[in-house]
Length: 353
Ligand SMILES: Nc1ncnc2c1ncn2[C@@H]1O[C@H](COP(=O)(O)OP(=O)(O)OP(=O)(O)O)[C@@H](O)[C@H]1O
Ligand SMILES: [Mg+2]
Image (tube, rainbow, N blue to C red):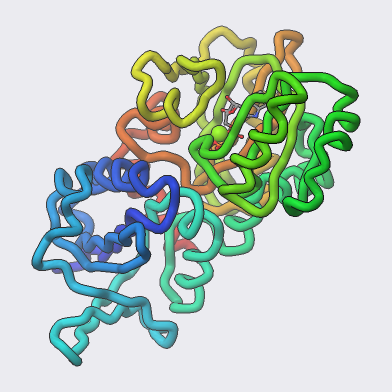
């Protein structure tokens, strides 16, 4: 093994973004330098079972890794302050797996929301990305809004938060927005646009709220912003850097799940038409939001850019998509950091004290 670092890749998970995570993990595994890292892989099924798996990337992609007969049940030990996991070898026998660093490639609930990060922190395992508190706050759109509002890091859309279903009074919401439509209704904790609706009239509000409450017990209603959708990748711990700026051209009316992952007509491009001062303003705002949220390692910060030039912060993703076509690696490629080097940097940042 020499002085190769042992990296544990986690994928799958009990999340509406399970499939996206498998695709992201397949890309990361393909680009990770095998000469530098001893790689082990844990797949988490949709039911929440953990398996150490040697399945090839293609089987991770299509989901058939779960049928691999060589998979072994595996668990993180809360006592392992020396970076060990317990691997089930026989009926009552366990082996140990020692890892230097964990790369959780999990999106959404139970992966990006601080729960996994808390588990890794308790187990004493260094990992790529933000800690439990910062992940949880960044995942929850209502908490993020409150923190960004408090530090005045960025402008945001007018928003009504329903803390629970009982509080979701349609008349009050419509009054809050002075009868103006369209509105966006979103679960506070979800991702990949799951449970999000664009509501064009009062009649659409109730079904939109019901859909969102299926994903989370807390729901946001927002004024619709008209503008370009732009994104910035941020990388670093105490001295983070912002990438160049990317733009999304959604094939559907908004960037819903289908537009993101299924409709091939959606495009992402590098923005080249902004003035240097506007570019700087956007990047500086992304860094302010990143610092406000206490992020580490990486995050993608998403904005709307109105025609008049106003920048409106939309959301931050602490474990953004990592597929071949995802914006996060694409933005760094365009900023002179190729995918494999990006992985090296993320691992270095995870190990930095
Ligand atoms: N206030 C708004 N005004 C206009 N469009 C919006 C608004 N909020 C959301 N959208 C549209 O809905 C999409 C999904 O919303 P948002 O990015 O908030 O959710 P998400 O599910 O968290 O996405 P991600 O997978 O990036 O975490 C946006 O990309 C945008 O197209
Ligand atoms: Mg989004």
